[in-house]
Image (tube, rainbow, N blue to C red; front, side):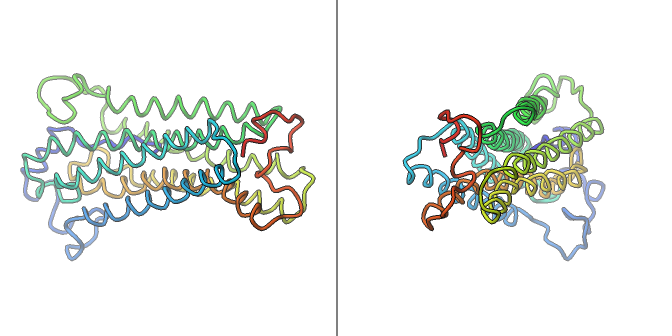
Amino acid sequence: MSSTIASPSASDATAAATSTSSAATPSSTATGSSATDLEDYSLPLNVTIWFLSGIATLFLTLRLYAKIWRKRPLWWDDYVLIAGWLSLILSCAFLTVCTHFDLGKHGEKIKPKNLSPLLKYSYFAGFFSILAAVWSKSSFAITLLGFSQGRTRKVIWFILISINIVMGGNALLQWIQCWPVPKLWLGGEGVCWLKFPKARAINTVVAVYSGTADIVLALLPWKIIWNAKIRRSEKLGALFAMSMGVFAGAASFSKILTLVAIGNADMITLVSLYIVATAEGAITIMAASIPILRALFHQKSGPTTPSVPSSFKITVDNSPRNSRV
């Protein structure tokens, strides 16, 4: 994910848990709808995040099978994508743990004894969600480096480095916003230098940059592939496969609407943010896997012309990085 999943501080959440109607009225929900809506979103949250991670797992498994079936060695983009997938699974696991500590309920419904572990594990979930997003984006960028050159290659390098700095810094910011760190979930003595309005502003900027990077990476193959000497149908198919990152960008932009949950004492408002953040990582993993799956399909159907990017021989050299898929 491209934004820190920031829970309320321990003191803010405690106030919500011990209040009656000040933190959340009987009619408030994760979406601000009527009292007839669900008062506990833990089950929908678990079902949604594990469904998304399951689909991402399927796409990654098929990607790796495509490599092994074609007797191609795994490359850096594969290893980085696997790391992103592991981070996504860990994020979902921590979110599931959080639901056992009343995540998905209104603030006043959270048991006081559950508050500290809920806050603690929610920060771990947010941290790994950020890693899932940044590493899956990095994997796709590394893939593009394999058949790019000139200015396009420089742009990809810039995005690869900058997205790791921006989102990596955002992940680190999650842990250093309060000192000592346990103050995040235990409260007590210490200082928190990052106030919630500033945190929301920072996360909005990061979400915009992340979504923009996704869209740019999705559009760059058009410049690379459009001039390739292959059939028009092959060219359009390859461009479609390589442009699926637009959907990851859309997920990142949509997350901006859920950032109002940061600093909200009623933690039920975080459910939408958790779901959209999980969707971003899962969709990016799927988008990074689709070009390789397309290569597998064309190998089985026997195309009459080289498919792109099943063969990265549309560059000026024939180094191993250009034929690894």
